[in-house]
Amino acid sequence: MKTNVIIAMVLCLMVSTVYAHQQKTAVTTISFNHRVNNIEVMHKFYLHDAEHAVRDLFDPAADILSSKATQNTFADYVQQQFAIETSEGHSLPLSFVGLELDGKYLWLYQETSIPKNLSSLSISNGALQDLWPAQINLVNIEGKGKLQSLLFDSSDNWLSISLSE
Image (cartoon, rainbow, N blue to C red; front, side, top):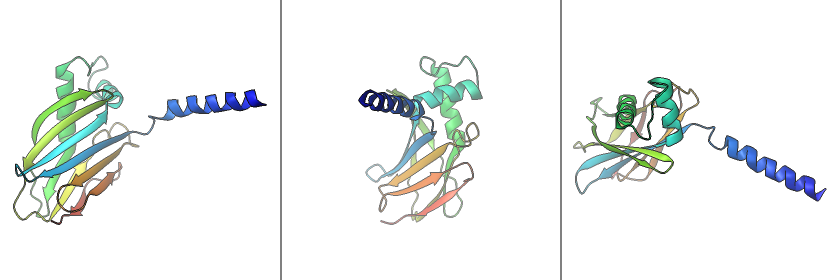
């Protein structure tokens, strides 16, 4: 009986490990850096997801680990899928700062100047949702009032938040 319990526990751990990364999720942080008057955007993707995405979206032989061109193609794709607008509907021009591979993550960085009298934001984040409808994109907004979060699923095009000091 004790052996059966141990075997069952080991099997449960193996199954949970296999399914641990089945949920497709990416996290973006929008940070207000008042010291340099910039909005800094940091996108964090599982490298495993990015690998599969570039192969499915662009080239079955793509290698995101060793090819700068493939990394830049993925970065371009993410930038096309993400946007920020003011409450007046003005698009904030996001500049690409760079990307880095960090263990099991791929980070992409963007920035823009903080507009004057900014009281709210509308955000669109559809990265990887065209490939995987179950993809969830969490966006955290920090540095202007309390920490706020938006959760995008494939049915969300734009979500809005109010900002405070």
